[in-house]
Length: 458
Image (tube, rainbow, N blue to C red; front, top):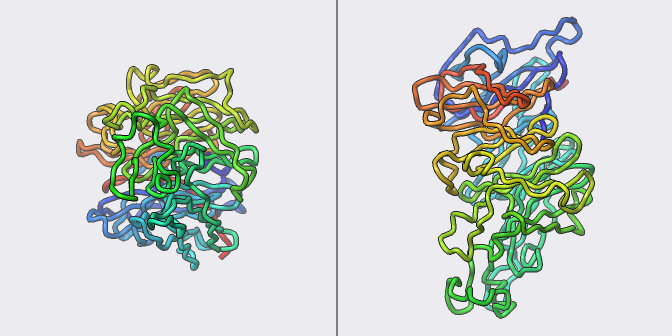
């Protein structure tokens, strides 16, 4: 999903941040255009928490490319959020992960006075493990137990899908998608990533394993021969908590946001497509500007201890041509890990054109997301991977922003926090040269996200 800057005369939303308290009364928050009629149409902003993490602030700033700022007495105080992102540069969304429960999600906009304001409508979302934008909707999804139960009382799993509609300020829930045996392997699944390309919706399918419901109703027929000792539980509640198909990658394609009549794409040339951070499934499927879909696989199965549940595939990427419902065999599979001198992939994002920003592990693979302190640019057209220069040393980097921001000039902005006493800063990355340049500094904690908001007539 490429969040492009609007042309001159729009206010740009700055990076969402986890920040310790600081202050600056001199920031000019309105971007000035050469014409009088274009004044006060948009603004840069950042959002972040105080040092205790007990409150979040959204603050406007003058630029992402230079200057300094803080949150003390500077901005709108809000609740904290798990994810921050903008929708069509009109609303800033705050998604809060609620440990398996539903919960309110807020949206923020730039009012006619050039101030950040909270939308009056609160979106009531279910538990989410992934999200994305399709058309006019923000879509969240997660795997969850349903009301359907077998004779032993085991609940079948389904995929919950929630549509947040900013245009009409509504929350809609789709009928639960049946997760059990979704791939024809007997296993239940979840989705990772919501991608729109050529009017179709693409999502990576993550096989989770065999549920107690699936085992009971099938009399354990889906357990591969020789894997019986991997089962856990007792009596009528027997499970297998990892996929038996670690060497396969699956993508589901739908014709529209209704998510009906799925087309399943499969390859055995790489493992499934997602980055892992505890129970969150980080999106690793993205569309280039020409509509081609790139499917990246970090291979999170390598964290398994049993070889039967572990894939030997390296971190890799394959392509689905624009409008297609199959992997592009002429493109093949690209071994990213070897190109990165042995560094495994943690997660990735789209940049401009057919460039992609990759976050790589530098201290060995894990499913906690720690030690991923290197960034690289992957060129989908040339299959070249280049490590980014201009960043702080890898051993002092403690965090990057969860979602970067792409401007109209083809630059990508990401925030960097270090443990060497320097201020967190925004870095702009030129994908063509894989070069990062230090920009806005914030005297606080960690900056997580950036974007822009166009002024609303309200």
